[in-house]
Image (cartoon, rainbow over the protein chains, first blue to last red):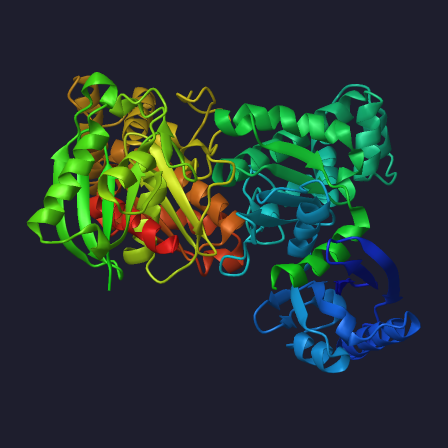
Length: 318
Length: 318
């Protein structure tokens, strides 16, 4: 029985795991991401760290079926290259697969970070056991990954741009240049934008309004906490958030009829309250046969989704 | 080199074709669909017609790789059964695969009619050469089929319910029980509904308004023709139609990033004018990388999409 290595490459840390072929995590470690000098140390540091760990555990390249990695930026899955990963200072094309295979003598596979997280949740998380899973991550931005009929969907390369589904043609401007994208109301920043906007026109009593008018730091967490305490303004804001995210989920499901839509990322820390709210609008807008079968669930793997999903790239390619 | 048989089973006719493995149509014929007595003659008639034709052409079951069929209703692709095809009077479960394989001695494959038409356009029509194609059919209703990474997407069974993508949460009631589905504004009936509704509030000069107020028969064709003649009310109506369909296409593309979105069905007879109008709104609401690469095109196969796509089911299963 061979082992797998999963790598989650991020702008501040690189996470590693050694897993069994069944996806059981046996070892975990991480290193800092050194983005100096156009990120030229990143890949050498990854190679060094893997070789060091294998030595430490008395393992050799022959013990591994392969290495999988999730990376930010535009990943060419076939060539194993990355370009435009700005949080890594990778402005030029990086020949990642070539370098890592040469440095470790283990076959290497790569995909973008959102796709890899989707694979993780589909393999071992909230979507386990299903071939049709959509992963939506509500973080700084809103991203996503799609597994349909057991395959990760790339399309022409940018499939899964769930944050740019339009939920309000008269809505807020988005960084992408369009108007009314889901990201403008459902990312960590988007929820706050929604709160500030609604607060301006809100006249009643509200702790949230006082905080906003007072210039205190208002985050998505503060807003969901206030809604939990039944602050009337916060309740209006999260209701609007549920509507937008529920509408987007129903439109995704009307196209793909997935078994599960998994919601992850920082904003999803609001927990089951969020799932209930979103599901209410999902059931309003999804096609009858679909609303009865597609489930909306919280992500289960947290930070491990990346390394687990990355490792599954290896299994899927053999 | 073996041959294929493609069957397009509809409520009024059953269309047949014999094709090469490359999808070239060599023979076509059709029979009436006899829906009497709960549609019990439909399958025996199909078997009789195939066996008769093979005799006529001096062919035997050994000359064929398989038979593929597109059917209305809920198709169980694995079991080869159909239920709930109301325009065939098939209320009870039909063991289609079992009967046809027994009657013809040729392997049989089946999918629903919208999926099969999508496969046809992907194999030999407007999406030829691409593994990522979305087919949208604007007819009595609005249906669709999705090919992603070369696979027809079924999800839990109802994937491709494109007619029930929500394009207006405050819109018209839909037969499905929801509100604001694409079908309520983009099907043949939907466009007319849109025209009647806008006409009520419209005060200016318009031949279309006179026709509506006069009780003349107004169809989607009449509306698009009047828009072509620059009737001001008709122009407002088709502009709204372009907006809704363009919005739905951009949301589909933001999820799947297909190479091509193919528009077919009766309403698409409006032709290149329709494609231009829809593309304008698609470019407004799709993610930048996606709007630059995904193309919106008219369907090319017309009535042949069904038999060609049905035949491709055979090839895809070998």
